[in-house]
Length: 233
Picture (cartoon, rainbow, N blue to C red):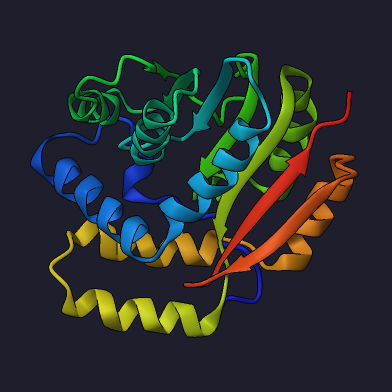
């Protein structure tokens, strides 16, 4: 069942999804990402890059969802007197409304509605591109083409976190989510996301085809990969 990547759609892929069910789903995903360490791991990698510069840095979060990564980065930058411009991009206006409502006093965060999977999508210029559990929405070929095109608008680094397609992870999530009070969408889409996600050799192949020469793929707890790509100019 997990031998090859699935291309099935998830309920969260519906840009018209809204209301209480969406809000409950976004809240559940935030909890999962927080307590399984995904948000912390992504933001830690970003902080290292921010500390290297004494200039304002622009960071784009692709498929930003509820904006958890952006708020965590903004809070750290405020405490450490670092100038940063943060932009979250997502295809669902209702998701962005939810994220905006969470951005209390975070004037450094803005949002843009765009269909990232559309071949006509053009990434705005930035220093660092981040993404968390979104890149698996691309087919392998689409992912390669996206990286080739996007890297021309990125000056420093790409950092993204992705699920590992793993039978044990799949079974564990299936059992644990059934016992926890998450929305039906979280439970069903979570399993679909694992089926759509990557194994390491697939990521290596994609990065090589996209002509990314300097990169690291690090395995993280809870069956995730953190991928860090240096942009050569």
